[in-house]
Length: 175
Image 1 (tube, one colour):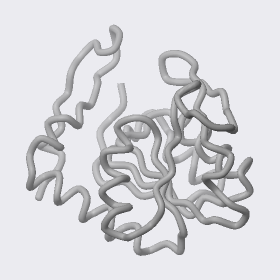
Image 2 (cartoon, rainbow, N blue to C red; image 1 turned 180 degrees about the vertical axis):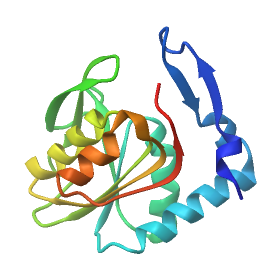
Image 3 (tube, rainbow, N blue to C red; image 1 turned 120 degrees about the horizontal axis):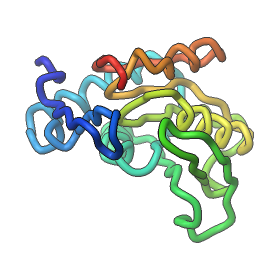
Image 4 (cartoon, rainbow, N blue to C red; image 1 turned 180 degrees about the horizontal axis):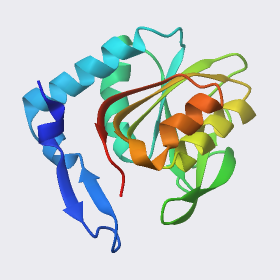
């Protein structure tokens, strides 16, 4: 199945000059969503890992289904002040601003190996922040799996150059 045809492109969102790749058109099609989850599950089997993590919020859609299928604990990386207990925090640059993500301090244990799943990688700032949260928690990143890679923006290359394993299902040029 060509998953690319299920991604809607929206020009000038969330600001002028950005071509937003919308996954809602993929997840509303039950066969395309099922195929996406199956592909992530198959790719994840290449790696030795103990937990699955996802980045708020669209990453949750994919990672929770994968976690359920593989019977692995699911860890949430959330925006600042969204988690109720003690957290680790990392500030980072986005393609169009700055942000902070957090994880509960008790989510990742020493030597846990974590696969991080997200819907899309652009410049890689959010993914690198998630990797820092895993490291601060004394775990290690087994791999990243993205549904979409905006290859022109260099996020996957940056992660690979830092020694991370990276998988993606679909590629588009970045804008």
